[in-house]
Length: 421
Image 1 (spheres, rainbow, N blue to C red):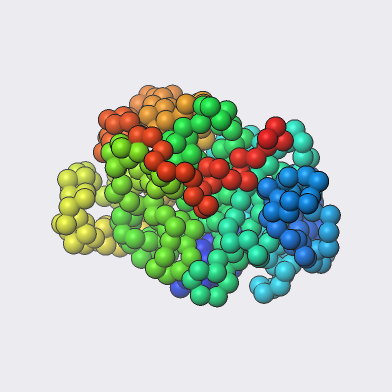
Image 2: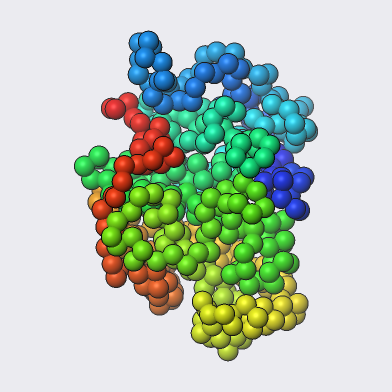
């Protein structure tokens, strides 16, 4: 039986080339989803009159200090499946399309990562909640993956309101947090390191990045615009884009862990050396796959390594990539898909090896090296170790937290609330 159709935006619709949603199939068999959309694992609602996001209650008169699901108040009319059980007939601009886009994106991302884990991924709230509530709250200027819920607000800082429920990267990032809380766990307060929270942000970004590469249209546009030179600023290196020129984090960064040797303030910035190392690993895996397909020469690959992070890289390497891509575009696409799936599988296996308490970036580096040895006998050991060392991971230790967590910190937010709290 075929899956269920949804229309999703691979990247925010205010960007060039992404104004129209793309039709995709998710794994849910056609006809298996209920209005909402909903299924046995999650349900979507668009509340009317919800006074505040889930978390600590702002109302001192409430009998409970926490606002937690389920929402029992009024909601916009649920999105209905068509006669064949699909949701791709819904039109953008309606609450029903927004709800379907949120559900479809979560299901799409879970399909990707349950494929890499080769098993279902449980929600970390399964002990108390049978299903995850996917909630849209326009008054929230953020997005959270918490205990029993995933709540989407929107951005008002860059012009008109842009709902995060229509932003694939933001939703996928929050699903990434949910995956990590399930697979790595929530640390004991006394055992939570700054690097744990930096790792969390990095992993969530990587979930979004790898997931976005499962859109054929995005892969095609990426390769056409870059000719396979992934170090050009491009659509997959922009995490959670808010406008053409403003993004929260960039995967292709040059941040080193030594910048935090004296200490750290924001876990988002602390995540960048780890995210950057994994992006560099993705690029190197891509080059190795290109070599396997005969799409580039060993001399070109060596030259790329020699010129990396120098002013000569862009003018010299872009011309070579343009020529090689024009000669064998199909091999470039197959190589990128192979590299995507190698890294996705390695990440899934790595995360299952980590201890949530006292976690640091060296633990992550050594775990993925062990995963590579298990899969290939260590074929990629040199490139993996080299990219972590280039970021000073394993060379320096992160210093202490230098200031109290800010309002925008997720390390001390609704994400970490559990019933025990």
